[in-house]
Length: 371
Image (cartoon, rainbow, N blue to C red; front, side, top):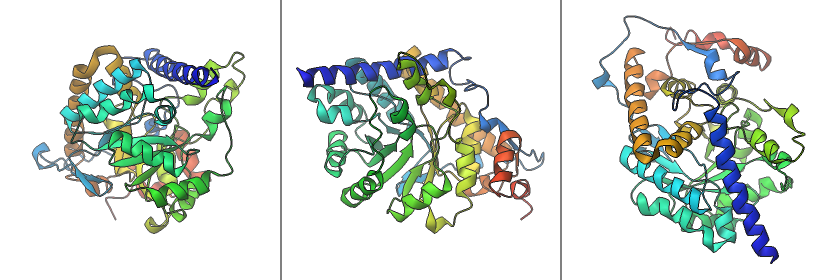
């Protein structure tokens, strides 16, 4: 009976996460164009417009690599959900959209399926609907290397996301904040994994110090997953009877702050960087790429769209984003991703203060074309 009760609690938690995550987006404007709440630090970044630098859109090449594999777009559907009948249908719709648009896709934590066989179809459906696409499994940092391999096998995954969620575990009513063994666990998973491992946060950011430690542990890929998107602190606090962690709202660093912090490290002393967290529109995608991300993940905007209007609606939205990314690259005179990383960026507001306090030369970003 205890095992059945635990499974029921995990299923309920998965449903709570989807309901509360989509609720955060529903409180804002229209699908795909939402502001992500006050204080999104992507708004502190501004491209300098050089009116004669634009190039024809057909000259733009957005080809990139993820895990050493060529991809047509430096954009991916980030890990979200799975484990119940309802969330399995969401994964199915996301996988169809990924297949039709050529995007890579991650899933939510597979841990529930490792413990409950009834939860496995909601993850297997991703590979069934998208047999040739780039698929990432996802597991929590506290799970064993053996569990990580089972997660990869379950999805026939091309890569493995290992999520770090110290803030979420602290606030989650049934959380297990056993942080002391996490680094050893990451090293064991990296050593055992037959596929590339990407370590990611769940919305509170990876600092330069953390990225250096991950690189020392053999991690080659990291998603900084910063503050500003789906707020798991708020989700878990809303699940508490007393909601007594509300004062922590805003904890952590944004994705732009993490990317700027990471740039202070030598490339050899940090993983290859992906970015997610607070990405609301194609302009945010370009800003993250311009700050050095190899690829950009989107969760909340895509999840709310697929819940509201299904796979076809998400396919239309992603196609619109892809077109806009290409057109904005042309407007900025960036024919490829290396050229985008040489565009001039102003860093203002709270993000500008962050760079000053961290000793980062914000002015250098405003003069990149000159150099």
